[in-house]
Length: 611
Image (tube, rainbow, N blue to C red; front, side, top):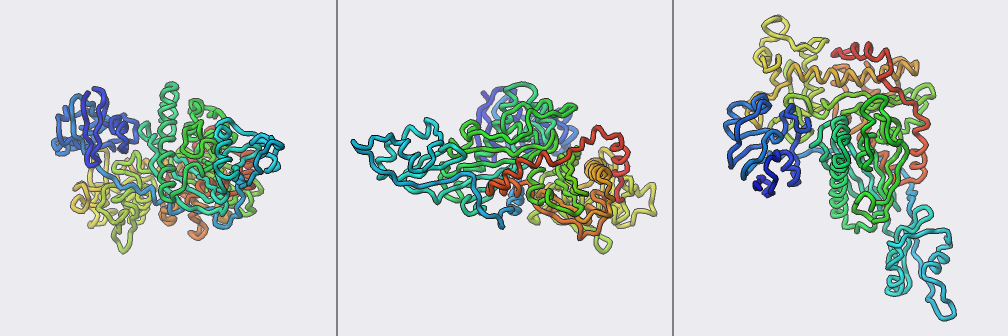
C-alpha cells in the first residue's frame, strides 16, 4: 500500500490505492477544511505535494488553483487519489474556535443543585451475630433501601469495603447507585456540559458542588469531512448504518478529546465525572446519539425523537465514569434544537414580559421571540456563509482571517485575527466588508458592486483600481497581494455579496414572520439578543447597515455570547433549571416557515442591503 507522510505534523500512514488525500488525512487524525464534502466545489482543502508525482490536475483543481500553484505542487486533497508514496504538506491553520471558550458563563449566580449526590459512609463490621450482606448493610446506612445497582458497580464492592476500613462513598443518581468508591470522596463531584455545534464543539468541566466552571476547551467538529452543513451530513447518514456510525464516531471521538483535555488541565480522574449534559441542533442530537436523522431533511421534517434522551456514558463510549449519565436536552422541532432551548434558558426568554427577540446566527439561523405573552421560535436556512463557507476566500475564524472592516475617513481600515497577514475572510469580516462597501457607496441596495467603467461618477478614483473583474464577476480588493500571507489579493466578490444576501435575508425574513405572527412592529422591540460566539464578534452597526437586523437603536442590540453553551452549563449545575428545560418545548410555539405563503415575499424584500 502507498505510504503517505504529512508535514509539518510528521504523521505517517499507509492507505489503500485510490484513497483521496482528504480521506487519508482524516485517517491520520489531521484536520483539513473542506466544506463541500469532497465534491471539489469549495476549493478549501488545499495541500502541497512536496515529494512524489502530483499527477494531472482535475477540472476542479484547474478552477480553484492557478497555473503557478499547480506547478508548485498544490492540489485539492479531495481530488487527489493516492497511487504511490507521497509527502504532503498540510497548511497549519491556527484555529480560533478557542475564542468561543472565553465566552463560557451562565453559572456565576447559580446555587449548586446537583442531580448526582455523593454520600460517604462508614459501615459497621459484619460478625457472626450480624451476617447482613454488604450491599444491604450499605443501603441501610444510606437509609435508601429502594436504591438499585448494576453488577459492574457491585462486583468489586466486598474487597473495597474491607481494604478501606469499611469506609466508602456512594454516588447516587435518582434511585440508582452509579458508583461506589473507596474512602471519602464526597468532595469530588464533577460534570461536563457540551455544546455540539455543526462547526465547533465546546466542552466545559464543572465542579457540581460549587456550580463553578473550572475548565473549558473546544475543537472543530470533525464531521466537516462529510460537509459543512447539516443537510450534507443527513444525506451521508441516510446511505446506511455504516455511514451513520461514521458520523457518530467522529463526534464521539471529538467529545473524548475534549474530555481528555479538560481532565488533563485539572488533573481530575475520569471516574469522578458523573454527568454530561449536551445541547445542539436536532441533527447533531441525532448523530451524537447514533439515531438515523434521514427524515429530518424532507418535508415535513420529522425527527426520530424530540424529548430529552438519557443514556449511560458506556453506551456511547464516552470517557467518564462508565455509569455516568449522559443527557441530551430536548429539541423543539426538526430544525430548532436543544441549542435554541439553551439560549432560552440562558437569556430567560421564557420569563420576559418585554418584547424581546434572540437570534443565534449560524448555518441555521434560529430565532426566538417573546412578545404579548407568547414564546415563538423558527429556523431559517441561512447557509454556511457566516462560517466562511461558499465564500471565495472565506474561512473560519482563525489567525489571518479578515475579521473587521470599517470605512473611516474615506478609507477602509482592516483588522485580521491575531494581527497576522491576511489569508481570507471570516464571517464577521464578511458582514463588516459588505457594510463598509455600502458606507463607501460602492454597492447599491440590490447588492450590486459598482462597475467603474459603467458608472465612472459613482466610484471614487482612489477605489477604481480596487474593483477588478474576476472569474465570475466584479471583485473588490480588501487586501492587496503585497500585504497578504499568500501573495494573492484578498477580495470580496459579487458572488460573496449574493451569498451574504441570501443568508442575512433569510434571518431577517424569519424575524419579520415572528413579529407578524405576534402582531408586534419592529420599532416596538425592546431588545434584540445576538447569541452564539459569532454573534459576539459581529459589529451591530454593520449588521444594521446591511439589513441583517431591523432598524433599531444600537443600544437595543445586545451580544449575549455563547448562550446555548450557557444554557447547557446551567442545566448541568441546577436540577430545577434542568426540569425547566424539560418542560420548555411544550411552551414554545414553533413556526414552520416553509408552509408560510408570505415568507417568499418577505424574504425577497429582506434581501436588500440596508432597510
